[in-house]
Length: 152
Image (cartoon, rainbow, N blue to C red; front, side, top):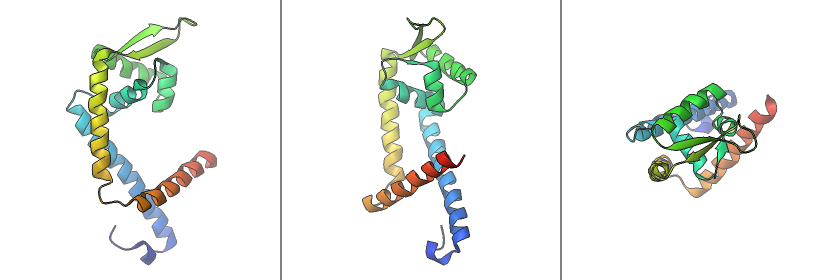
């Protein structure tokens, strides 16, 4: 941003904030996607692996909800991960229609690489930003998320 926030009218400051927030999110995804593609993944596949790493097993519906994607999309995503040998799918003992997803041993090494990429992107993104600034930004972002969750 070129001008200090105090020099802008409030409506312009709010519009600029929303634009910058959106731009930051897109750039972060673009950078992350470019880095994981070098390792044979996509942003969606990498996110799925990160979500699955802390679970003994998760079903497809739960994963779709966490990724905020529809059922057919998660099935295609999982087909790709299974083809790469990174996950297995099995029927649930309670309901044969429910597919449980588990990481394979081969996926564990890939997850470690993805976590290293996450840390690299995080370090670059937050370079030269003070803890107090991050704390203030976190408070604002938490309120933005709360406002969106309760407004619609």
